Image (cartoon, rainbow, N blue to C red; front, side):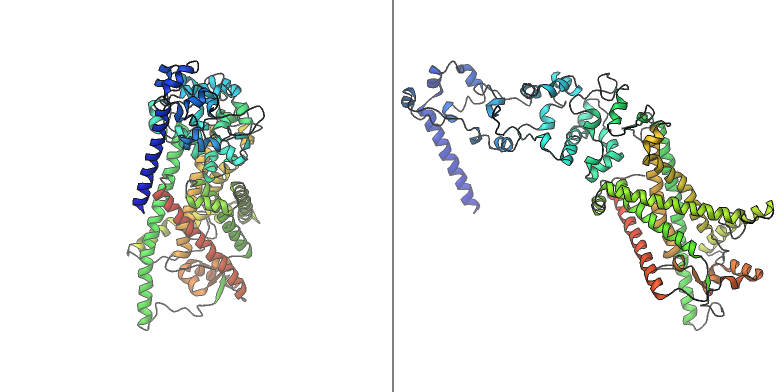
Length: 621
């Protein structure tokens, strides 16, 4: 088969060459130029790219010179596609190939000097001269741009008309849909500005594309929703691209508010101080962003480092403890005796359970809609966005999750205020409530608990028992307050930029973006790894601790894990208040356990995707 195709091609080339030679031998160019020297001189035609072909290579009908001289054989329209097949294919689908009563563009409309045309040698100036002969209005804007100045000076790296619109396959911008037009206003710019070598030799900062893709606008562009955000040409304009310090630039100080107000109607002089291409790794030009980035990265690394190490130690020690229990039971003994070990006690009220459900729902909403934006270059991020129906829907769900967060935070504040101040009889009682055993506020006991836990990890002491709240539970509670100010505060600023931009300088949104992104990463990473392990994954609890869903705790577990609380309640005579007469029903348990397992599986899946993004996506904190 290959030999057949090869010989077929050889035969085709041979026959075609024979026809051309035969035609050229029948009518030589010299013969034609004896009469048609008014069209082109022999010297110009010979020097042209078509000179080697001869006249009849294009005017193929002229096989009989005598018949032509007598007017019996005249040439028809030249079919350039016979040789320029790829160019014609592109032209055929372009906006230039259309049926218009007053305009009919063909090859010679642009290549007017067809008989004396020479190779253009990639000289963009020649291409620009052809384009501006028709497109006068864009040409006037482009003529004063930094790109036009570069091309005119002979810099072939500078953008010419053909770099953005193409050479032959030119699309109609007016016939593009909204998404295609939005893509077209950014993609051609990235082609050049992502070329670091080209940017370096032209002394242009190479970070434009990277910083754009790290912004909210760029992340939406990356995810496939460019029509929802600003692209390059929306700010820099399509043709009149100039440095921002040029008074004629769309981004000059006098015109910057107008440029931003196209999308942000209430843009102010403070608002436009936003760093559109602020690089948080550039300590020289953006010190505020740099040190914010360093501080957040240090917080992430420090927090994960301490608690992941804590979890690893606990996992190992927990397996050893479980093994010891198995050996003791297998030997017919028991580690300790607890009378009626399965008696149920109430640990959480219905309000606590409802709040925890709100936390889970809001956190999953925020994670599922926020992480795709964080890792916008990942294929899985695009799949998630498509699942939500686009970035606009994901944004609405993200704000719904934020609203639920504010609700349970307000409930936590109200409950804390009631706990601290309701029926407060004397000032000193406030401090007893704040630092007492029922409080989630850290106290000196937590230091002893941490020390005892570490000693147990290292086989240097017995496993400690706790009161109502452990030190890791207190940390989780305090983290909510920190997170509300860090994530919630920065999130509100990004949610209502024009409101906050009326009083605050625009660069605070750059800072807010770093804090919101990194703090959200810290929260999701911590909840899905450390919190899930402390609550559900440790050997004593795996695969799930259901107490957060039904609020119930067995007596054996109560005494083993919170022995000090049990003793305190015994001494106070309040144990009976916490006894549960009617445990939660099977249907309730089935629904809530199904919900809990689903939440855990989603968290684990998102953790795997985040790890993959860091390992193979080139991401940093």
